[in-house]
Length: 496
Image (cartoon, rainbow, N blue to C red; front, side):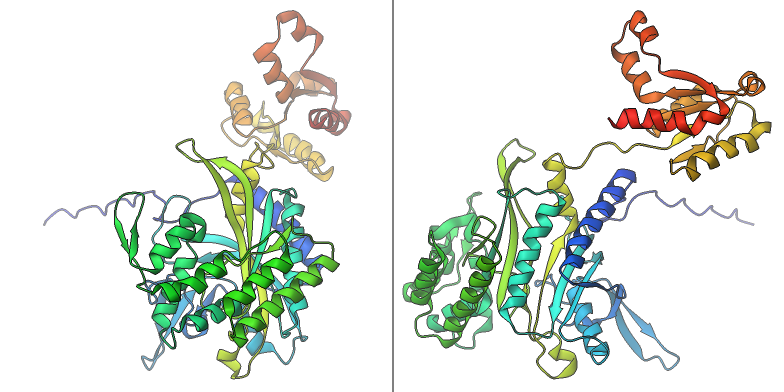
């Protein structure tokens, strides 16, 4: 009989495009989400937690991976007893599920409905440096009103949120545009119903920040050489068709009134373009009334959001401070949030137009920005570690831990092999523990306990002489009854 082959062991590797988050990363994200939720709640938004799985029909055709519209999500087919299969998918954002929730529960929900949602989303896209297939988003949306006050409020809330989490004024800018203005430009270009050509124009406009006016002009025409020397084919428009786009992109002036004047020249006689400019003027007036000047929020015609469901105002939050890339070159951090008005998304379910507007914050990018600013990314303090000198006295050590925990102090008993005391202190060091508690048989007989300040001890060991060590003790013997008070005193001293 042939010997059976052992099944190969699975490889302990993270799936491609995904990553694991440890300790301080999870804690920092939770703290930041709590701060964001506080701003959203202050603005009157209510929390919503919807399913991570939706039907593919409910998610619709607004997938983020436009080049692979049937592969942008993680999807599978479920069959019932009659082999009728429904396609299910992990949500790729938090907006499409909101449209389904509102359509399903609209009779019970207040109108307008203001909600915020936080959680992971999944996109079946090609991963790259800093680009993962699972990431966190933090959204806020108002459904059920066409008032530009809702859009202005979203922009103001985004500004307040960035400052609340630690991005100071001057290090960010919320930029606002309107898809209707862009549609007006497309109209005067004479592209008619050629949606493919319109999409090409929008994608080219989106490169304005990278290639500039001359680069966009070439890409809208015959094409251009990129930095690597490769030739990029252009859209193939005529000079007459290109001019309205360039006028639109370069319409931003030093003050909003002049910007609006330039935009009117770019959209010509287009009614939809004029409507979009009027909406931008309303938003500008409302923000000014709330004290949000152009140093925080400004009208910027170069903003073109990528998703196809935006129908009106669009906005994007950009961090303006400089960072250094892996080659030591200066770079601006870039966008951490975006959003806009999407008046047709709920209509897919109800058949009736339902206006809506909202924003989405890229949580991981915002966390990375805070680390760049030195607002996060430190080391987390671990628990107080109660060492074990006698495994038969585990109940005594558990009693100490219970006292510390009941006093609100994070603590744990060492649960490894207690034979080597040095290993217990190495464990406490790896846990970044601030204090170790030691009670051997001698201490117990005398009703005393040893408390070691591990933070001070590490500093003394690095820098102090023997005489300084004696003058600044890092280990104290106190009565067992004073355990909690002494530990708290040491922790407070470390915090100071």
